[in-house]
Image (cartoon, rainbow, N blue to C red; front, side, top):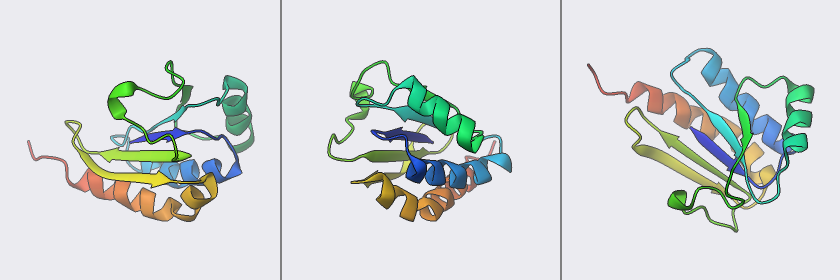
Length: 121
């Protein structure tokens, strides 16, 4: 799962904590939080220090995120849930970080569902 955000605030912490809860029980989830459009490393350090998140937090090299992802600049938060192999199973776009926090459980459920959709070997 990839979480791209233009904010690093308490609302984002709520979203990441919901995903952390799924990830703690399934190491295959592999979530990364990526700060874009002005999120600074210090913002993420503060978030990490305050909330002790298990999801890795990083800053995008490209200010607006990877061009191939075509992130909507009007969405403060974009979440891409994908299954093994990289096929996106669910995509969320939130106008504000508060909207993202309000849907945190839905995002976590989508992550758990993607884990169940793994191809059988």
